[in-house]
Structure formats: C-alpha cells, structure tokens
Length: 247
Ligand code: BV8
Image (cartoon, rainbow, N blue to C red; front, side, top):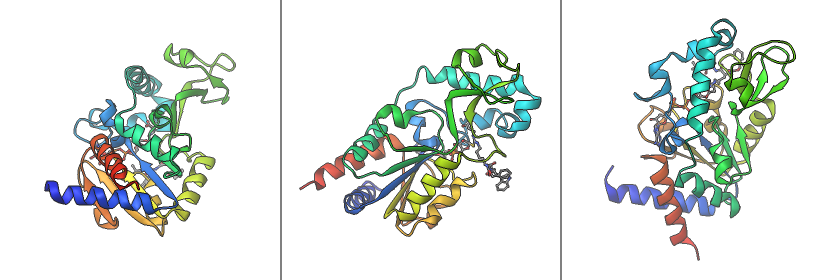
C-alpha cells in the first residue's frame, strides 16, 4: 500500500477511535508476533511445524500427552523471554483514556494484561494457569513444567487453554458478545479469523469495523476499513495520529 493512502487510513481510524463512545479490540496471534511469539498459520507459525489437530485437542491431551505436553511446555518456556511490544502499550493507553472498553483476545499469552489493559476477555483461555484434566483441581506452573501427575488424583495436568472441541469460557464469551453488540467500533488485529466461534464476532456489531493484519485473509471485504501491516508499528502510528487529533 502506498504511503499516502496508508497514512490517510491510519488518520481515518484514529478519528473513528476519537469519535467512538464504545470501542472493542479483537486480537489474534498476529498481535503477539511483534513481541516474539510465532503465530499459528503463517509460514513460520506453530501449526506449520505441527498439526494443531494433533496437539491442541482433548484427544491429543488424553491419548498423546507427551506431544501435547511438549507443545505447551515449549510455548510456556518461550514466554519467559517475551514482553509486550509498543503496540500493546498503545492499547493500554487507550483504555486508560476511556477510549477502549474491552480487549477480546484469542491469545493465551497474557501480554495485554502485562501491558496494563484491565478489561480483557481471554476467549481461548490462558497458558499462565493450570489444572488437572481429570479432577479440575488447580495446579502450579512448576508441577506442569515438571510433567508431574495431579497430586490429588494422579490425572494429567494441562494449561487452562480452550482446546479444539472445547467450549469457550462462558464469562469471557458473553462479555465479548455483549461488548461487540453495543460497540460503535470493532478493531480486529492480527487474526486469520479461521477459528469458530470467535470469527463470528466482527459480524455481530452494528458499529464500524476495521481490520489490521499483516496479510490479506480473504475477509477484508467484510470490514469498513482494512489496513495491511504489522500490529506494533501500525498501533504506534495510530497512537501518534490520535495525539495529533487531540484538542
Ligand atoms: C467450539 C488453543 C463449541 C490455545 C486454539 C468445522 C468448520 C468450522 C468450525 C469447526 C469445524 N470443526 C470444528 C469446528 C470448531 C473449531 C474450529 O473453529 N475449527 C476450525 C480450525 C476449523 N472451534 C472450536 O473447537 C472452538 N470451540 O467451537 O466450541 C463446540 C464444542 C464442541 C463441539 C463443537 C463445537 C474452540 C476453538 C479454540 C481452539 N484453541 N488454541 C492455544 O494453544 O493457543 S485455536 C488457535 O487458533 C489459537 O488459540 C489462536 O488464537 C487461534 C486463532 O488463530 P489466530 O489467532 O487467528 O492466528 P493465525 O496464525 O491463524 O493468524 C494470525 C494472523 O496474523 C495471520 O493472518 C497473519 O497474517 C497475521 N499476522 C502475522 N504476523 C502479524 C500479523 N498481523 C499483524 N502483525 C503481525 N506482526
């Protein structure tokens, strides 16, 4: 995209944010890539190396625990080296100023909260907390990372993520649906929108919709505005454009 056109689109989105009384941001793995976390479906994404249906499913957890455990163990270990990128802090500042009412995220890395957002709905759960798959008792990171069995029942320990075929957390899902339904603006950042039911959220709003994504996903036509690019620099430019708008 030409520089001038992109600048105009960034200014337009900044104006929409300034004018909106209720804004929701929906993020996917692409929003964490600039913090150093691979996404799922890009060429260098996690799923390119392993089939998600082999590791992020209940069947994998129950019948192929070593592979499923290793997939999450490696991602959790990697998180120790990761911190929010500047774009995450732009979203936190928007919330501080009352210009962002909810971040609904498919990401399980906790980076939005680390950057300071307090209103976050984790639609696919979190890899920062753990439980026993059998008796549901809470477990510690140390117990999971040491591949220990549940101390209470001997069951398999797992992170509190939503695996394929599992229901989304009721509270997070209903918060996200309610927020999107009343939003005047929904900004979708870094997601291929391939996973149901989260991919239904953008169509649930009567408000304006914008998609910020490194590449076209085939869903652009559903959005009022599409800005191709990386999340961190785009969000930084949007933050700067908002500063220039301020009275
Ligand atoms: C459910 C675990 C009810 C946590 C994940 C057949 C047809 C349709 C649907 C289904 C079907 N069969 C089954 C289903 C339902 C299924 C589903 O949608 N399957 C799809 C894949 C076919 N969904 C479910 O099972 C959900 N539950 O439906 O419950 C139910 C219950 C029982 C039975 C039936 C129904 C549960 C879904 C949650 C699954 N868990 N992960 C974890 O390990 O992280 S999903 C996984 O994909 C991650 O959570 C991830 O967040 C999610 C979505 O991926 P994205 O975030 O979009 O990431 P992706 O790599 O795909 O895209 C990144 C984008 O960013 C790319 O476009 C890229 O270009 C861009 N990008 C890259 N870098 C940057 C960037 N953009 C900007 N800047 C950058 N720097």
